[in-house]
Length: 224
Image 1 (cartoon, rainbow, N blue to C red):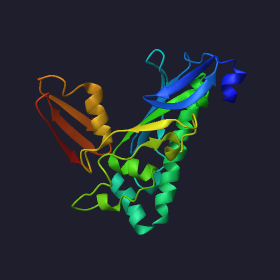
Image 2: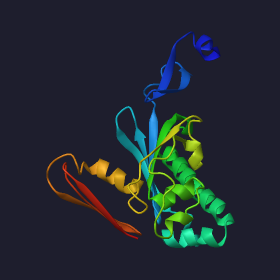
Image 3: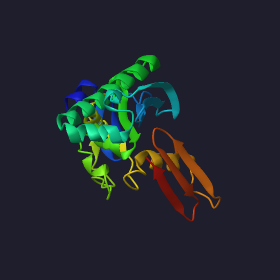
């Protein structure tokens, strides 16, 4: 109410899908941004997007600050199994990495952190669970068990990213313990299953995943 009166009823309502997250003075519709994060085991990438044009504004990458706990997901899970306190430290390192990148891309793009109304986080199951402070030990042995294929709605603050205070964090579902949200994001981005051509999607990362797909089927396998 105060915003409406102070702005003489000339305001901008900020929606993310059907969620009203803010009412701002004046016309701020031309300055709306999002950040897409690839939370990799080795490298983390942030892409600042202008939602007015759909174009990238700035891209930055950095080594994942969790690396002192191991170069791959298995050694990081082992670190938590040997010392439960490591889970909080790994979570904090993920948050530190994501927030640092958010600040860097906003600085380069001349964008205020408060003008970022949404983030997207893609990563393998272990990286997502560690970033949210979820115990990854059930991922370490057969039957490999994930906490959930679809996680509950999350906020940017759940990942330690201080952008707009009510900015949601979009997460992708997982197909399995080692065919995770990063692979689902890749399949969506490439349009792998939109036509009848049979195509191969290969993620050559610290762990390797392969998806064979067409509009009629999609088969995935992983080699952690």
